[in-house]
Image 1 (cartoon, one colour):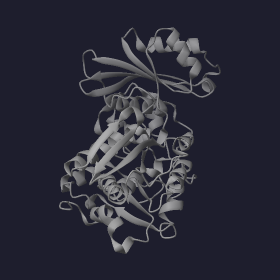
Image 2 (cartoon, one colour; image 1 turned 90 degrees about the vertical axis):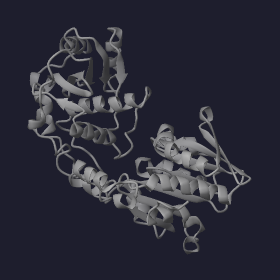
Image 3 (tube, helix red, strand yellow; image 1 turned 135 degrees about the vertical axis):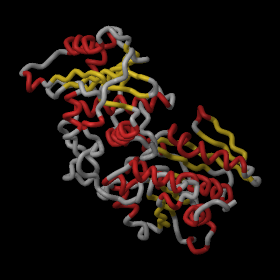
Image 4 (cartoon, one colour; image 1 turned 45 degrees about the vertical axis):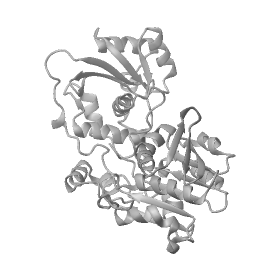
Length: 417
């Protein structure tokens, strides 16, 4: 079974039955993206649960229930079935019933997106919990999951990619691993034998600065400098000739702050931001009404068939005004950090392109910076209106590609573009 795994992956798979680690009450794996953490954590968790318990309850946690299915179960379930595990999923109840070797256990799926998520796991008695991408979850959810593991012999399994060194999870779990009797395993890309040297080099070329140190080297470092430091005006180019295959508009709404709308057209598999509307009420000396902004959007659309308008989710009155006028409106996902990562990858890969006519966006992208005064990742709340609107559009593309029509994709799995 262990053929083809790296030494660190083998340690994760077998630590629970290794006498050297019998005093450990949890395992924590962090490090680079695509380093093989998730699959070996998931496989090890199921093997441990089925070897040690019968008719007990366990938790499989991610940022959302959908991310648990996508990021964890999609790779782990086929391996379990290949090994002879019987796995029955009851999607309506968000649970798996697993049988192996005469034992049966139930695995519940939980999402830890926000502070309210802790209530979802409260009250259940668990023999163990696996938290995939734990650093993306609020502290209240992680601590509630840990508190629910009260069955004798229960263990906590945690994995994440690095964030800022000021992040609570780094301070309370990574730095205090020994104090909490946690087995800490740090991964790099080279700990994943499934990655070829060429693939590793490609990932190394994709990132720079703080994100290179986080996602390639697996270090907990602060974000610094320009958010899109790789981008320069020379990357702007006009759309191809002819009519676009599809049109969309993204909107960041502002009354006191500037409003920014972008018109996007698709040629082949590439989306071009061909035109924009940008209104700064402070500069102009007058605030615009919702009705005026609707007319501005109409002028930007120029009679084109706009398939969807992606709008700042906090702009309730503007959303309603657009709906009344018959626009097909989608509320944007406003998860800033994951959205920045999605946007950066789409820009870098050329899946979205900014056209030279979009002067205000090009101005903002050269000024949009991380706030280095913060202990955690924050962007400065300035020069961010076209940036927010572009991010709404990028994340909506990813959400649509995944077939998600409700509240957003919380990511593209963190760092895994």
